[in-house]
Image (cartoon, rainbow, N blue to C red; front, side, top):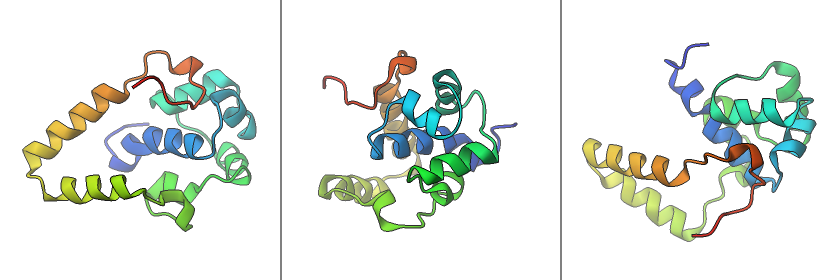
Length: 126
């Protein structure tokens, strides 16, 4: 699949976000979708995209599949923002395009996870 579709390019980020929201590691989350940990890692890296049976399985585990695919939450728990997140989002929306690209680059650099295969969903030192 091509990553030209913006929804596909953000899918891996949303998938990882949902896994962490549910407090699951890659092995358990993948198991909910009927795949091994390596496949889950590939989905979160955007190297592969899951099929409908995987999506159905993770939906049973509590994943908001509508949010994964479209960015629109189907229930409020998916995107319940903390107060600091709301401030961050409000500030981001005030930035110019170039500044937004800089923020996104910073976030990408800070969240790059070279050891994602061993990711447990726990926050690292910071």
